[in-house]
Length: 104
Image (cartoon, rainbow, N blue to C red):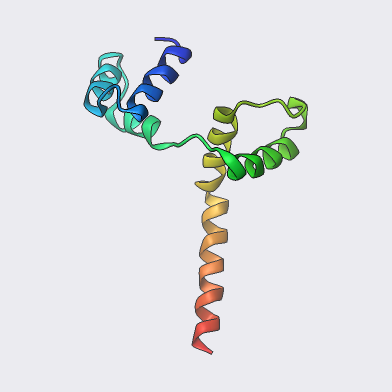
């Protein structure tokens, strides 16, 4: 299965034309793990304003792309940034600062 076929299959699952169970069975049949199959379905493709914001950030970080990027490429990058250890530390510090404000 190539990347294009995989993207079509994921889109079919999200549209309800293929069940999650069928998708996971196909992925396992190809030698992938169940957690990977679930992760492929969990990362949503950005759209609308959030896609615009993510695309502008992506363009600033990757000027070599010349402003040309697919929504899937930007979404993958955006989710990686959101789930990075640096983002976790920022969220942790922000929550701590908010908690401190409430105490006083």
